[in-house]
Length: 167
Image 1 (cartoon, rainbow, N blue to C red):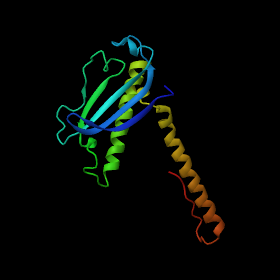
Image 2 (cartoon, helix red, strand yellow):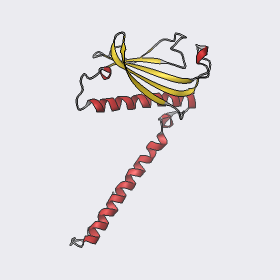
Image 3 (cartoon, one colour):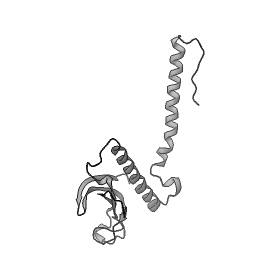
Image 4 (cartoon, rainbow, N blue to C red):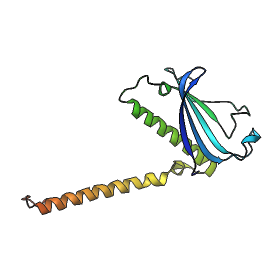
C-alpha cells in the first residue's frame, strides 16, 4: 500500500457541518457488491459531523451496493472535532492530533489484521519504526552526555573529576 494517502475535506452534511476524512489507496477490490469497483483500490470514508452530543457515535453506514460496499466502507462519527472553528483553544491542535493518530492507528491495525493476518503488536502500523525510537533517543542522549563530558574535561575550570553518566 505504498500509494495510500488520506484526504481531509470540510463538508456540509444534511444534518450539520463537519469533515470528511478519506483513507484511500488500499488493496485491490475483489468481489464487491458493485462490480464497477472490482479492480479498483479500496478506501474508507469517515464523516465527522459536528455535535456536542456523541450518542450513536461511530456508526457504520449500511451497504447499499452503489456507493457503500465492502470495498468502500463509510463511517459516521459525531464529535465536537467536526465543528469548524468552535471551541478552538490552545488544546484544539492537541485533540486533533490525538484524533488523527487514533484514526490512523485504528485503520492501519484493521487493515493489517484483515489483509495481512497480523495479530498483537505486529498489527500496529509501522511497528518496526516505533521499535527503533528508544534506541535512537538513547543514542542521542548518549551523544549529548559525551559532548558534555568532553566540554567539561577540556575547559579546565572543573576542580572535581566529575563525569556525567547515562543511567
